[in-house]
Image (cartoon, rainbow, N blue to C red; front, side, top):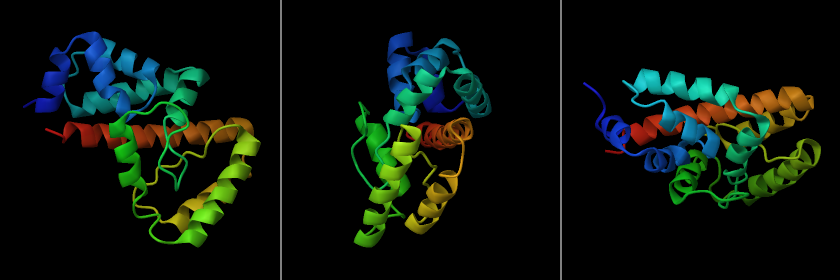
Length: 172
């Protein structure tokens, strides 16, 4: 039996379908291409198709997805983000930051160094990770080359998108 959210999404016009799926990734090119691949039979096909599209996107489309996220520890995206996307980001980061102002300051400093080096915000799949764990990941990734770090950021975005697609499918 097909998921109700997916069945309804398959029946939408292309523009509406792309707009609805956009919060799961943040890249308009990804959303438009995923909408153009409908109908999508089931959750497994959705995940596989999403990943395939993501991996084939040019760097500019990936950057748009990265920019739709708030910095770790913050609540506002770098550029336009949907309300749903911002809500999901807050949920994903909720275990990382409580009242720990020291961790927030450490992350602000580390984020700044990362952005100076790589020219984009630090992307990590934050779900279930503590601030300490994410800070250690950021520090480790600072050793990456530009190309290696772009691949790692893209992989983290792919993981975030997969989690958000699952969440979206459960939103009925």
